[in-house]
Image 1 (spheres, helix red, strand yellow):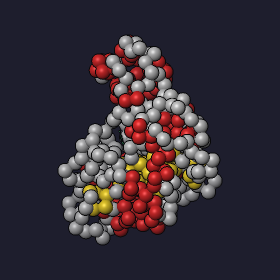
Image 2: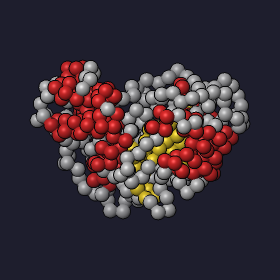
Image 3: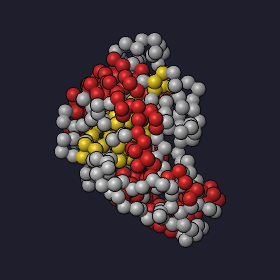
Image 4: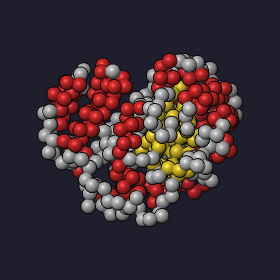
Length: 394
Ligand SMILES: Cc1cc2nc3c(=O)[nH]c(=O)nc-3n(C[C@H](O)[C@H](O)[C@H](O)COP(=O)(O)O)c2cc1C
C-alpha cells in the first residue's frame, strides 16, 4: 500500500460508479470531480500546465479584479492569459460592482475566450473585504444577487460558479444567502471553503458544514479545506456527499497530487509519492516553465517559495531551504539543490506538512463603513472600483 498518514489508513480507492463526473456545461463534465483552487501568486499558466500534465480536472487561474479588467489594466489583463493548449480556460474574478463585474465577464468571454468564470465570495484579505468584495459580499444579499445575475447574464453560455467561506465569523454565517443567490442567478456550482473569513487558516476546516450545505443545495457543492492527500478527497466526498472537491495548499510543492487523485477516483492504488530525486526533477521542470514565462529574474524569485514548499518535510532540507530563499538564477537554484540526497524517500511527515498560509485567525474581518447596518443595500461601496493592486488571495 502506498505511503499514507494514519488518518487515511483504511480509506479505499473509489468503487466503480461510486462518484459521478461533475458537469461544467451540458457538454463538458470533469472527471475526476477535482478542481485546482484559484490561488493568487500560484495558479499562473506555468503551474497550471505542470498540474495538468500530472492529472485531470479543472485548473483555475489566479483571481483578477473586475475593475482592472474593465479598465484593461495591462497587469490585470496579463494575469488573465492562458496557454494555447489549455483545454478549459478557467478564471476567478472578484469585485462588488455589478456593472464592472459584468464588463469583466464580457471581456473574458469575448476577448480572452474563457470557458468558465468563478466568482470570489470567500477571500478574507483586508484589501478585498474592505471594498465589499470576497467574503464581505454575501453579507449584502441584494448586492450579491445583483453581482451574480449581472455576471451570469454577461457570460451568456459560459458557466459561472461561486466560491465562498461559511461566513464572516461564527456569529455571522452567510452561506445560506450565498447558496440562494448562487442558485437563483443560475450558477453551475458553489465551492465551500469550510472556514469563516475570521478564522483565516486556523484550526481545521469543518467538513460537517459541507455536509449540511450539500443537503440543502439543489446545485452541486464542491468541498474545500484541508485536502492534503488524495485520500482526503475521497474521505470528504464520502463524509459530506459533496459533488466534487477543490484543492488548494495540498498541491503546493506536490503537483503529483493530481496524478494520485486521478488514480484513486479511477479505482487504482497510487504509487508512493516521489523520492527526493524525482521531486527535484519536478522542481527543475517548474523552474524552467516559470523562467520561460516570466524571465529569469521574476521566475527565480517565484521559485524561492516553490523550492521551500517542494522540500518541506524532507530530512536535512532546512539548511538548504534557507539558502534557497536568496537564489537569483537557475544556476544558484541547482547549486543549492545539489546538496540534497536524491535517494531520500518521501517521508510520512511531509504528507501533511503545512505550506503557504499560516494558521492564524484575524480579530475582525475588515468591512466597508456601515456594511452590516444596511444588509439590504444594493449599491457597491465607495472604493469598490479602486484600481487593481496586487492581491495575496485567500
Ligand atoms: C497562496 C494562496 C492564495 C490563495 N488565493 C485565492 C484566490 O485568489 N481566490 C480564492 O478563492 N481563494 C484563494 N485561496 C484560498 C484557496 O483557494 C482555498 O480555498 C484555501 O486554501 C483552502 O483550501 P486548502 O485547505 O485546500 O488549501 C488562496 C490560498 C492560498 C494558500
